Length: 246
Image 1: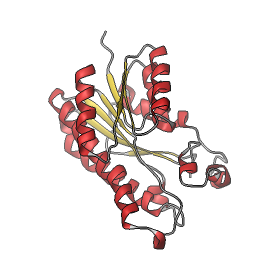
Image 2 (image 1 turned 60 degrees about the vertical axis):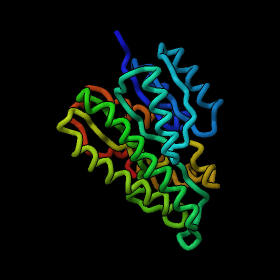
Image 3 (image 1 turned 30 degrees about the horizontal axis):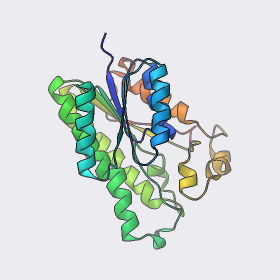
Image 4 (image 1 turned 45 degrees about the vertical axis):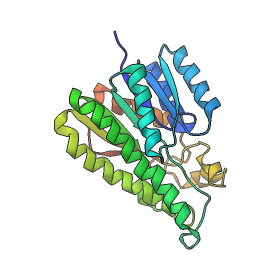
């Protein structure tokens, strides 16, 4: 049988990498996009191939519309129809208060986390809607409702925008047989905290989580891949917290 095809953006590390590996284990062929970490993407592809998947690696900065077009052209050529999108690519900047934010920082944050993600989802819909099936998972964040004061208010705002986009898009395409969901991770042990200049942040805040621990990228991936499955066939338009109760 032909394996279904899943595109994962931001697949070279963290939640994207864990999701790609698990999707491969669950029977998907996987297309992996990355921006800067080619070696990470190659390691993920090797693990996916060990699980029996065909793979494709494409460099793409989702803030660039032309790069998104080229990404989908490569997926079309390599695999044909697309069955699932894990819309994961995103960035965080150095911790800062709102009074320290600059126009350039805000433009980059929203170009990647909102505009780029919306355009990535748009291209998936254009391919899925004619076939009347497909699943889109937008990776957002618990920061969207927590606000991330004194650290990443701009990041939190960008993820809140994606929560609303998830609901709006899901309502547009539900009658066409497509499902759109969000996943909102909490304090997850990935390198995003180091990218924000605070590598110990997750562990330091873990005591504020009802489960009294941080989560793993693999735990988030389990939720994502379940939402992609037929076991979640009557779920659309909602965002699932993977936060340990936070």
